[in-house]
Length: 606
Image (cartoon, rainbow, N blue to C red):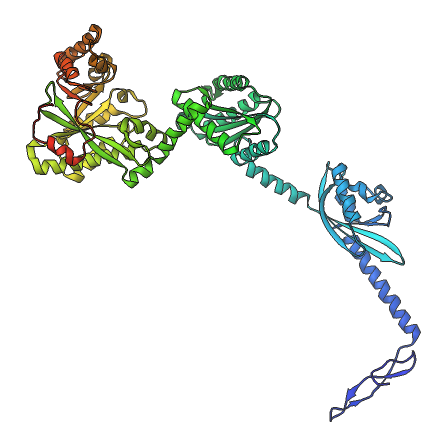
């Protein structure tokens, strides 16, 4: 029977082909029954030996269990994995009991419950171990059926170190490496979780900034600064140690605290005051007692009802207000005041774009000889923000906002460049008839270490000599520890730049001889000038101005005044010896073209 297979011991044929390609039967002798059985036994023995070798040397822990999930055998790798001394420790134990704790035992039980005959499942869980409280494993389980009997095979892969490494990476991703506190990402997650829980009560968020931390960092070095930050973190952990307090380091010297529960604003404020007090205690590093203070912004809100972004913005607004008040201050967010502050901060954030888009321009205001204003002594250059939504905003309103965002110096440079360009054009067209252009340096620019270089570069750019520029600065800028305006003024005055000091009284005037400032004159401003605009100004006010004028005369200085509101106001100032004035009784915010009518000409005041 070609190509077929007959009974044992019978000849069967194996097909082959002749030269023409036709199949030709070829006899083949089938093996005897005894030989076949021998081969089958040998193959089975070889398979069992291979399984025994695999079972013995498999790097994975292997557990064999019966249909009732009772362990019947384990391999050496499983003993090493669990730290068991011998098979006797686990044989006879139910598989479910291998899980560490109720949760893992439940996971193991549910896994085996869902295991279909011949199927396979994979799960991660923790099992008990002798050398540690827990051992993380990756479980692969399957079933085998033979002779109506069902067996379960469980293979445990040790992923403990991998799990620990993952936990380490996760911890590093959510914690600050210097202080060990949760970082900003973790803080946001925690706060959003508290808000999503919708548990009734109140939530409080505190933002803290270390005051003057740059002084510590620059003066004592980064190592000491790091020690101080660790100390701040430890103090905050201690102060806010009650249940539910979540302390985090957001960035640099900024920290945050979240509280949830039955909170009263007064209690939260007390904690803030306690933190401020504890932080003020010196930390000794190399016999140097380093003390810091902190500004704190606080917001307390009902839950449910609070939103994450709203809480964060409110805390930031309160912190900004606290920093504006000075060091070691706290501010509890007030919704009404917060709306005003947010408006200010929105404006502050928009200054850079306004400058780039041309919304901020230079305008001019005349300074005239009192009382009749017929002679123009200078044109004061000032900035005006033509806001598309809020209309014109004066420089004195948005310069303090620019200080928050670091835009003061760019604004000052723009003012200087545009004023000098205008002065150069007028100088070329009107010659000696062109008035002096005067500009008041914003505080941050006045104390800039590169002030001399900035002024010289702009003068060279437009081709003007230093004598064509008049700079004004407020008296407080001379005392600002962040810079050295006195030294800068010394260089500029030696170059030929004219300098006028803006003062509010006699003490400011005395700064000129005390610091040997080369001023050409002074401009009075503030209450000292305002009170003289009243219908019947008090005699002490007149006497104060007269003393300033007399002392200025002794120093060889001329006296002017800012904020002159009317002709009678100008007369009153002139009677006391004030020679030059500027203010709202003269045209304000003139464009360059409008200001040209004042160039080289005199006009009576209507």
